[in-house]
View 1 (cartoon, one colour):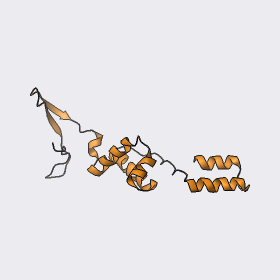
View 2 (cartoon, helix red, strand yellow; view 1 turned 90 degrees about the horizontal axis):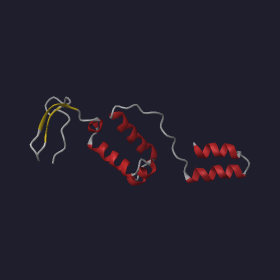
View 3 (tube, rainbow, N blue to C red; view 1 turned 30 degrees about the vertical axis):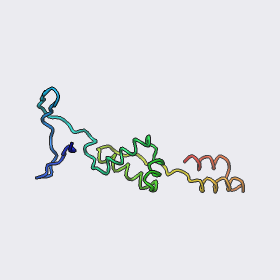
View 4 (cartoon, rainbow, N blue to C red; view 1 turned 135 degrees about the vertical axis):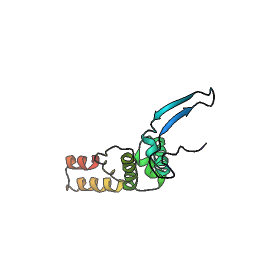
Length: 124
C-alpha cells in the first residue's frame, strides 16, 4: 500500500480527501475530510516521532538511539512540533552530565558552593 499524497504533484498545493471507501463492504462516503496534523510531517519527521514514542518521550533515550547530541534531538522535536502547527515553549534545560555533577559535588566539598546552590545546579 502506498503512502497518502498530501500535496498536489502538479501545483504543490494541499490536497483534500473527498472520498472514503471500504473495500470489504463497498461503502463509499463522500465529503471533505482532514488529513490531521501528523500528515504535515515528512518521512524523516514521522520516523523521529515513531522513535520518540517508542522511547516513551524520553529525549535521552532518543539521543542514545540516534547516537546524537541532546541539542540536535531537541531541535528535531521542536521542528516536528512547529510543523504540526503548535507553538513551542521554552526548551527543557540540557540534562546535567555525570562530569558536571562530579564538578558540582567537588565544589561543595571544597566549600565553593553551598548545598542549596548545588541542589539548584543539579536540578536545572
